[in-house]
Length: 143
Ligand code: THU
Image (cartoon, rainbow, N blue to C red; front, side):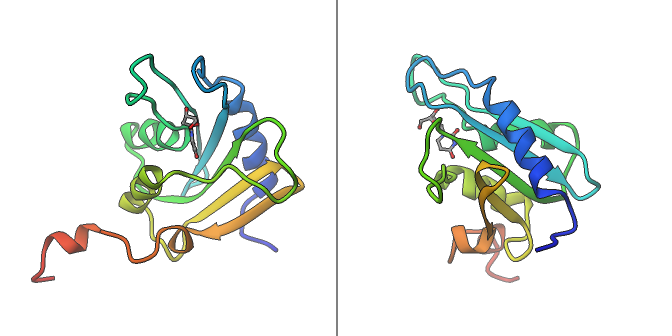
C-alpha cells in the first residue's frame, strides 16, 4: 500500500532513535520517528527518571522536539519498542501520548505505524487508537 511516503525509512529512523533510550529502571527501549507534513523527521526515545512519573515516552519526545521547533502539521509517526517481540505484537502508544498526538493531528488522516522491523509493522489511523476522545472542541460548547 502506498501512503505517499517511505514507511520503511521512517521505521528505520525509529529503530535508530530507540538505541538512545534512557531506561535504567524498566530496561524497555522505545523509539519514535515523526514525519511532518513537509517531510521532515523528528525522532525521540523514552527518557526515564528516578522519580518515575517524570518519565517521557518516545512519542512525546518526538512531538515535543518538533513542536518546540515550530512544527504544527504532521503526517505519521513510527513507533518501535521492546527487543524481542513476537511477529504482530507491537509496542503501542500509551493513552497520554495518544492524547498529545490528537492535539496536533487530524485523527482521520494521521497514521500511527507500530513496528518491530521494516517487514513487521501495522498501520493505524489515530482515530482507531483514541475513539470518542476529549478534544479542544469540547472546551467551547458554542462551536
Ligand atoms: N513507553 C514509551 O516510551 N512509549 C510507549 O509507547 C509505551 C511506553 C516507555 C515508558 C517507559 O519508559 C517504558 O516504556 C516502560 O513503560
